[in-house]
Image (cartoon, rainbow, N blue to C red; front, side, top):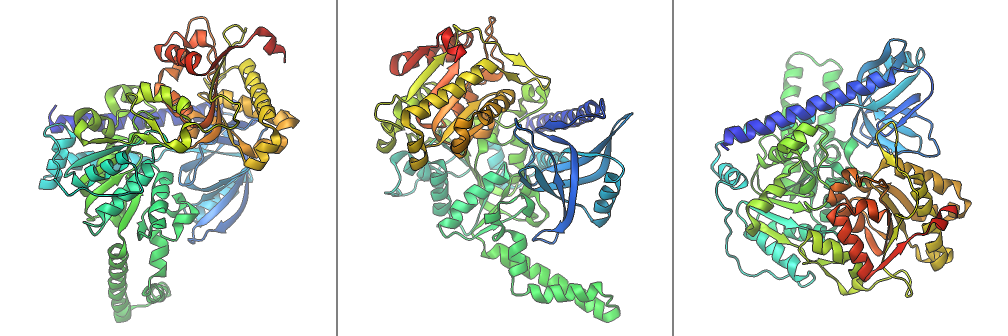
Length: 626
């Protein structure tokens, strides 16, 4: 495929994904217009809402508080800081959308703060709320799609020699090249981590740090950045999400690295605000003079005075901007944020992309336009990026650039092999299936147990029970009998180790399920039982997606699917099970029908592995009446 065809194909996939976003948004509005009564409690929508007071945040932006009811079986919210939202109200003819697009500033228990475009929009919103009940739902972030399309066009046409070389390697037209450097030494790291950093430093176009769960990927990446800064004045560090950018930035700051965080402050963690461009801009010694100049201009300076002040204003803006970037050793932002206005004409020798296995390829090109070489870090055996369009996914939009490089150029890949999270019996099957059996458990994790009489791995097989999966109106599957068994199992386990130990030793539990409907049901059952009231802070219930990047002492997986035909839905995406299983430190409990799941080779072999190395328990029908 020619370069032109390659990028034209990616642009077409981005356009398909945008159209699917628009269709889904329109369908959502149409569905909400069916009824004028009741409430809507969905992951991406709340109706009705109540408006609170307007306020100004720390950055001087106008916000409005939105409050809503929280039901007892709350779903996981898709509302996150920085995401766009729109307001609507319902009429006899359907849902009517208000023209004001706002952004989530923060989300709390039953409340959100949303940044408003201006005072007029806030006033219009309050006026509408006096006549109608309002709702709020996630909007479409058109900026992201525009940035990706423009980046693909520029990546196709750019003729800079260094970039062309990088492009040719990434498209498989030439192999990557590596320098030969003296052996580096990092005694505090294991051998695979040291080898990965060596490969990063020696790479001239691309390097991959493949970090399976618990192998210290972030630690390795931080050391690789610091080692690169021994040779370069400044690097660019990106990730697909703000949370991931904040995490790697915080780790670099803790090592004493001067980080400049670029992007929308609403999307940053509180810890990162102090190193945000906006805060550093306002803290610059020349900012006070600039503020006074702007104040004088706003108050009506004219003629020669205005001309002189505007020239000085421009001089100060250029100086402050230059100082902030020159002082930074690391500039960090999201992949899309690399196209932010402040980043225009910025160039870096090295770009680091963390969580690259969750990044859409077009977004990666936006950042790579600013670099000579790229280092990608992540694990393509865990969850991929979200693609809503089935056609775009089939066309390749769900295939990440990291995956492509791993396939094309294995010599550029460094696999981290020592994991510090899981008991070795929990680790063994994921290691064999996903990582060629190359993972080793560190001594401090290999035999760690919650209780000395415990076993680390168990499957409760529900095949003999008359369980029934059900699909709700949101197309999410749940299994109420299995959910009750999960709750009983959790209670029995806590009784075995004692609630007092859970409290005193802060043993934490995670209940993971592939389906939101099941997660919602399990949360409701937990709340209904008085036994768990004092223990709730130790227990987290969520979907696989919500647990990526987390870990718990004990993990219970509710697999949900139970049917005669062996239909398992998106449990066929085995990366989900890899994420779910590898969250556990000391105990993994799998609950599900081995008969239904056994139609797939992965689950068949997993069940056999548990039979040989753990406990495989066929739950008798009597358990159902407990």
